[in-house]
Image 1 (cartoon, helix red, strand yellow):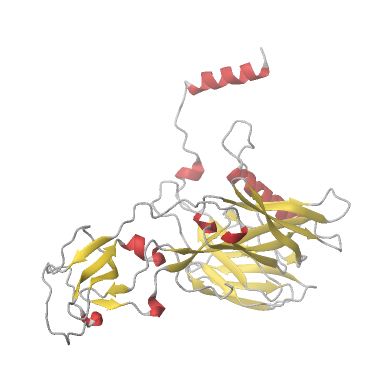
Image 2: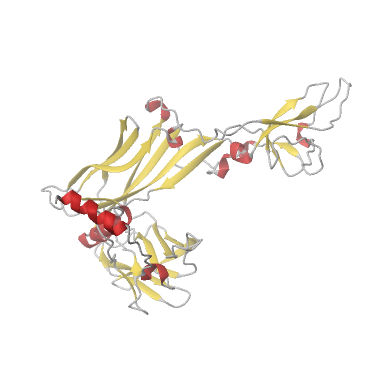
Length: 401
């Protein structure tokens, strides 16, 4: 019997004898601490995110650890506190650490559980030589090049943050405060917004088996030609971390456990051993690896004019304008009539308007109106078609060109 025939026969046999299996990791009542981030030894901020795992059956996807005491400690007892800036997010401004010392992370939770990472030496990332993209038939591929002249790093990790500009389906020149339609001020525009996203995959490279510490053509991200991210302008900020061999093995194991499972030929799940432990309960597993070192970064911008004439998938394909007319509106033949657009009253609950779409609407433009006749109503659409802040922010990022 050939190898593939044997494998196929095994699949057929075992698929007929299925039995539910609930491993301890799913049914266990406890949760595991998850620590994400790195200690930045340079002028950039140190950002640590602390959470606890949730059961697969849980309706909540996040379980941040709040109000913990988080510090960076040196092997000479210097202490650098981190402040909680959001739920489970702890930040310290540039620490500018002494590269000759070792450092660890300390976490003390509100229930007096004490966690430490191992002391780690400072390992600084060399600069990113270049961050660039290539155009494929179905999108763009983004890559980095880097090298370490000292030939000491050998292991690298990257993550990134994407930002893009987009428009809503309709530009709204008016807004409602609940019962009155007002002219929309310039500082409250909801037509142009910026969206953002962060990397979700583990991006690694090793030059251990190379004579020179050169890592070229490292794949970072792919953006499809149909993505709305490329419709106007897109930017990506890539951060590069230098890793020890232990840190590299941790991230490689994490990558195998989270990204390379699903078929009978993939690696089997295995325990992920980091460098963080619970001092008050040594048997408690902790997930995470805290490295120490300065991070290098680079950003590029890509405008739609630099790309082929791709057509992005339209997120507003179901959007349409409707007319919201006054059921009864005042009329004057007086040639001196002056339209006061700012104070036109619309009470959505009183029947002043005929509602063709139903549900909440945002006024877009005025209908009618002249020197002799007041406005008859407004064009309007549902909020998701008008208000771009429902998918991002209308505050321009400070790095945007």
